[in-house]
Image (cartoon, rainbow, N blue to C red; front, top):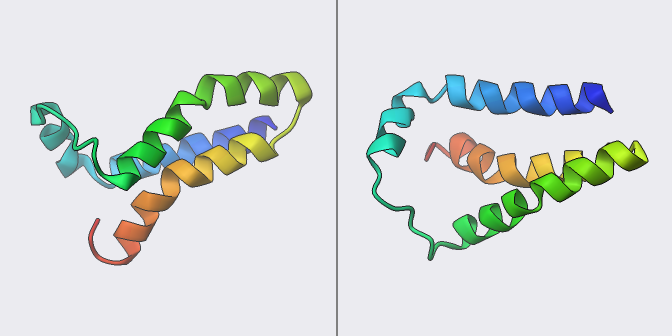
Length: 85
């Protein structure tokens, strides 16, 4: 289980490191366009993060955290591979 969590953490760190030029834009951003469907999905998944982590550790399951990680990373990966990211 810990291995899968470390892999997901590494992937998220890699996304951040490979997009350092975007970090200042995030700092300057006064608001996030909450009306977009992708934002709503991401927000819902991130709100569940503490619950999923607790459940995963209590039950020694890796599937919930893997699924949540995929849902969080997937929109970014799709925009990256399509040339939008």
